[in-house]
Structure formats: structure tokens, C-alpha cells
Amino acid sequence: MNRRESYLRRKKINRSFASSQEMRNHNNNSLNNLNAPGNDAWSDSDRGPSSFRTRSPGAALPLSASLGRMTYLVPFPDLNLMPDSPPPETSSTAGWSFAPTLDVEADKGSNSLAIVPVPDHENHQALVVQTLDQDDQGLDRYVLKRTRMIYDSLLIHLTVEGPKPSRAVNVKAWRLMKERELWLNKGQHLVGSVPGVEIGDIFFYRMELCMFGFHRQSQAGIDYTTAQRSSFGVPIATSIIVSSGYEDDEDRGDELVYSGQGGRDKSGQQRHQKLEGGNLAMVHSMQHGVAVRVIRGLEYKSEVRSKVFVYDGLYRITDCSLVRKSGFDIFKFTLVRIQGQPEMGSARLKRALTLRNTPLAAMPAGYISFNLYGKNEGVPVYLYNDIDYNRSPLNYGYISQSDISSVISAQGGNNGGCNCKLSCTDDCICVRKNGGELPYSPYGYLLRGKPVIFECGVTCKCTSGCANRVAQRGLRKKMEVFRTREAGWGVRSLDLIHAGEFICEYAGIMVTKELGEILSTNGESLVYPGRFAGNWKLWGDLSDVYPDNVQPSYPTLPPIDYAMDVSRLRSVAAFIRHSREPNVMAQFVFHDHNNLKFPRVMLFALENISPLTELSLDYVVVDEVDERLAIGG
Image (cartoon, rainbow, N blue to C red; front, side, top):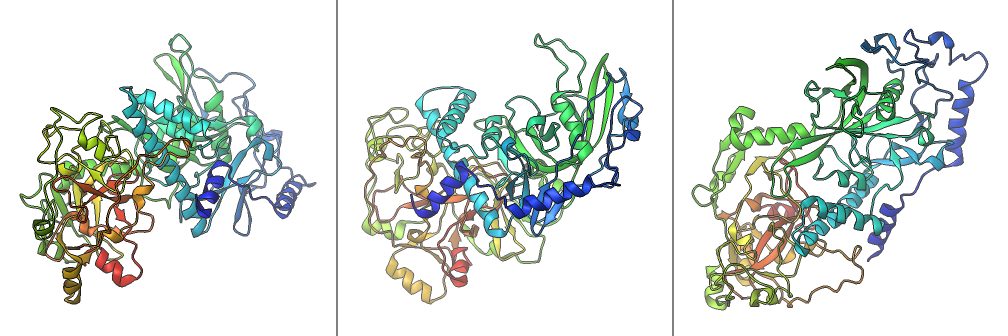
């Protein structure tokens, strides 16, 4: 573990709190000014007609007490909204004086925020956030992505240990992460955005939300801080999960009506909802103008799950009412999305579903082609440009596999195969080549990155459905080459891509190093796979979970120094742009020959990639010229 990784390890287990005496004095002065003589902030005359004591600040104290770039949540003393008596059976909060009196501004630049202790309540761990600079935002995102990578890898490994239901595997992974102290924000109650989590991030299990301190309730739809942990002295709602559990709930995206929690006893019998727990916390959040995280649960069929959870940003609670439904009282909360945030992840997911089936209905202008590959690929690849009139991708021919005939015919041979009947077993020759284990899970996801993977080939006797035949099957996701506003072309998927899932082959015409040097002098677009970042080393590394685990041994590869000419023939991967924080990695794979100098380059997902998210690959470029060559011209 290098110095940077050691620092990040300490950061994600025990995040440091930034609190100085100057900040304490500033906030204490704010409170002293609030309680100064003549400032009658708490008046019993504000008592509402529905027996709710509503002590509203006379001179509006801003929720954000700013000190330079720091933003703090200031505690409100002696606030009490508990009812003297139950509300009428059918009523509205119009007369309750529940209108928010405070304001919270959205972080319009980013969702990456730092944690700051609430003054005078540090022992309660109820935390709010401050805006970070660019480096800290990137660091928080890096920590979250690395932690999720460990968790996603662990899930895949556990599916190989035995035929367990997905929920059982998820719970075991969740517990292992907790035992190894790999949870993020453990014991902290975050108000507002969670550091490292971005709008549009997709999660597959509620346990994931708990593990990152994003939504700490494994079942309840409302997460909140208790009065003991809140700087207000009252419970405050922090996040909700919208899953359309009530037929009369309204969800228009930027505005939604959310039903309160409760309403059933332990035996399952329906009952009145009460102003307690999450419902009471929602009322307090509305009263104080505290932003609430909204996570939507959506039906989305995939190989592993039929439902996903998508983060859609921060909302304010603007109204609360108590309505009668089938003879029982139900709380209804109206939430409005704070402006200035990125597009909702759920909206992007729904748009991607439309684009997969009826693209012109979602985007009537901009599409140039719906089948860039022609008949050379079974899954269509779209071409989209709504920025200018450039159509240069039409100038290339497209192939799903690299043309290796010029190098293998003179230097290679056929791959020796196994004698398995249906699928490879633990003791077949192909498994032994891969270090004694199959490289893929039952779902076809990569178990761990390796210097090289040996898939079954044409001389193997196993069937096409063999678990060791994954990358050779080619593209399975609908892709779109699109014109970017920054520079050149990019690639995005119209489908959800799971972490560890195969995407496509980085294909072109393989040429020797010597021929590549000649072609480069003529200005041809060349890619050098041997220079790609070794991100495969990160995927499947579970040393933090199993410190005593012995890694399998792998064959040593000779230097990979061939070049790939993509100036005439290429795959869609040649349009993937460079990034130093990529979501895609390159993995060398053999399946049709055994010449170790010329492996095929297969691309796998390093993380869960939401639909319409641009794919990125680390080409290890050193300047702008290399970057232009890396993305294929």
C-alpha cells in the first residue's frame, strides 16, 4: 500500500473533523446575539390554532452562518413542535404555521461536500457539510469509488462460493465490510449531500446505502437524526426513498407528494399514522428548511436485480397535510427539488429506456445512424450529434474483433483446448491456465483482474455457453457514439453496465512494433495497448477484506509492444476518451491463439455505469498530442 492509498484508507475509515476555536467563537457569538435583550425570537403569540406550539424566529436567523468558505448549521434553542393533543382526524396543516422559515442553498457546483461537526454537539455526530475545493471533491469521489469497487468485487466473489440468493450474498458482503471497518461515514448522521456521492449514482441494495451513510435505514423509507443527535434538539429528516408504495402518491420529478411512514401494526393491520419518528422529523425539516436527500427506487431488470436505487439530489419539504384514506389518517409531504442541480438520475434512466426502443421519440433531432456497424455486429450502435455537422465516424469501417492475421500468421499458433463436455470444471486445462480458477462469476462478471485471461477457444470441446466464454461473445450493450462539447467524440451506453461486466473489444488492425513506427510517421492513428494503465490490478483486490488470502499465480507475459491501427477499421471502443479516473479498464485475453505477444484487448467496467454516462479509459497519455491519438483521431 503506497503513501496515497494509506492516506485514503485512513480517510475513509475515520474522516477528520475540521473544527477550530475561531469557528466555535463565531457560532457562539451568533447564538449570543440571538438571545440578546430586545431580540424576542421566541414568542408564544406564534402558537397555532391546531394546538401546535410553533415558536418561529422573529428576526430570521439564516441556516447558513458563513465564515469564509465554511458553512455551518446553527442550533436553535428550545424549539418544540410536539402537539399538545392529537390533530383532528381529517385536517390540513394550513393552520399549523408549518411554513419553512429558513433557507438552504444548493451546492450548484458539485455534490462533493466535506463533513463539519455541529457546534456544541460534537459528541452527537450530527453533521452538516461545507463546500470543498476541486482537489477535495475529487479525493472524496476517489475514496467512494474505491470502496464501492471492493464491495462490488466482494459480491461477485461470494456468488462463486455457492448458489445463494442475491439478498443473502448482499447481507454477507455488507457484514464483512462492516467487520473490516470499510464502511464510510460510520456513526455519522449527514445532513445534505454525502461526500463523494453524485446525483445519478445507482445502487442495487439498500444495504449499500447504509454502508455509505447515505440512507441508514435498511427498511424504513425515512431516515432521520434523533433529537439527541440533532443540533436543533429535535429529530431532523435527512433522506427518503421514493418507491411508489402508495397509489395516490404523486411524483412529477422536480415535485413529489410523499406519504409518511407507519400505518400498520406488528400484525400487519392498518392503523392511523402518528406524528412521531420519521413523520415528526419530516415536519421539523420542513420547519427549519433543511434539505432532504431523495433516492428513487425504480424497476430495472438486469442479470442480478430487477430494481435499482438512484440518487436524484436535494429537495425541500414545502407542505405537510393529514388526509383520510380508507378511514385512516396518512401524512402527506410535498417536496420540491432545489434548483441548480444536475439532471435527476431517474430522469436519465427513463430517457435511456426510451432511447433503446424508440430513440426518435426521445430525441427527434441529432441521430445520424442507428446501426454504425452495419451487419458486422448483432447489437446496434447509434451515432448522435446535436452540436455541429461533423459526421466523421461514418468514414471508418467497423469490426467487432481485431484483425490479427498479419501478426499471428507468421508468429502464432492455435490455442490448445480442454475436453470438458458442457462447461469448464475446476480441474480442466483452461482453469489451470487461469491460476486454478474460472475468471468469471456465474453471471459472467470478471472475478479479478489478471495479467492475462485464457478463455476457451475453437479447439475446446465445451459448448458456447461455457462459463469461460465471455469476452469472445462480443458487444451485448447498446452503445452510442456522440459528439461532445469539449472535444471530439465520446461513447456512452444506453444500458446499465454492472461493475466487472464485459463491454466490448478494443479492436483495430494489429501491427508489429516496427510497422507501427513506419505508420506513425505517415500520421496514421495508432493505439499502443501495452501503454494502457494497469487498472486491472485494482479490480478484485480483496486484501482489505481477506488480508491472509493468497493470490493465484499467473504466467509472466513478454512485453506487449504491438500497435493497433484504427485509422481505417476500428470498434466503437476507439472513440472512448481518456481519463485519469476511468470507469473502464483494459484486460488482456486469449481465446483463438496462444502467442503471448499479441493478446486481445477486452474492456470491462470498473464500476456500475449508469445509462448515458460517458465511458472513459486511462491511456496514460503525457500530452495533448498523445491524447488525440489515444481517442482515435
